[in-house]
Amino acid sequence: MFIMNGESGSSGEAKRIVLGVQYDGAPWQGWQTQLNGLTVQDKLELALGKFTQHDISTSCAGRTDAGVHAIEQVVHFDTVLDRDMQSWVRGVNTFLPSSIAVRWATEVTNDTEENFHARFSARSRTYQYVLYNNQVRSPLLEGKAGWVFRTLDVDKMRVAAEHLLGEHDFSSFRSVQCQAKSPVKTMYAIKIEQRGDLIMFTVHANAFLHHMVRNIIGSLIYVGNGTQPTAWLKELLEAQDRKVAAPTFMADGLYLAKIDYDPKWKLPQIDTQNFLWS
Image 1 (cartoon, helix red, strand yellow):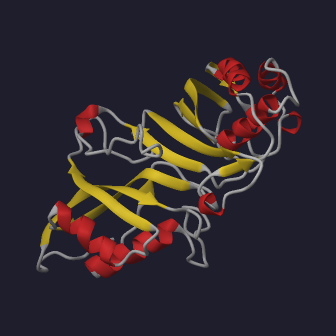
Image 2: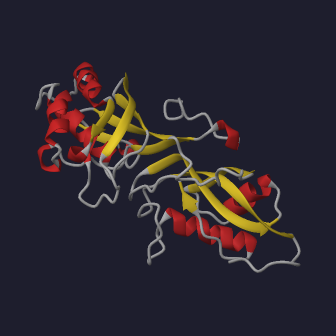
Image 3: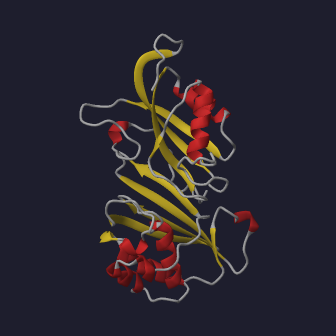
């Protein structure tokens, strides 16, 4: 609750501010706040508090696990303070560690039909996974990319991924800790690109279950290394049983890339399409 009427820099009316936040997840124990304070949300809210001299509670588009990165996480909060949008960016970044940065800020105007919400207003989400495929690990990619030393057949993985497109019950790729109301999600696209020893998986869906992307990547790797045939992904979907799929793959190479919203909100989102390749 904000009780700031009459204070300098206060308009008296609450406004909704939206931030685009980028972070290296390696040093942190995920997004969601914890008692130990070692999460991205904890550090962001601490920085917001130092900048505004008031407690601010944030909501995000999608919680990320420990070690998972974000090219563009979307966060919103309410405040009665009047600040220039660039002040929110520069001011909050002053109090953030080097692994977290606010990239942009904007104020949204709620309409009579809908109040903007970072999570519930999202139309779809895109994750990217960077995989290093070489016999020897690279210390330069530690924490930034997954690693598989066995040679992978990218073409076979592409064929296998086609089975996942469309609306399905993704229970076989769902963590036992998942709190989603339904395992049914719609997969819009899975793109697999290779540049040298790097393989990029881009996964676009209306929403994702807990560990869903990492479980899909692990199963596609089983196809790529010849452990399973391409039709195995179809069998996994039909089984609707987490125990039959591959183990959850490492978090290192996973990036929350983009959250899609109705253009009416006019969010100044960055172009993330080729961010990890540049």
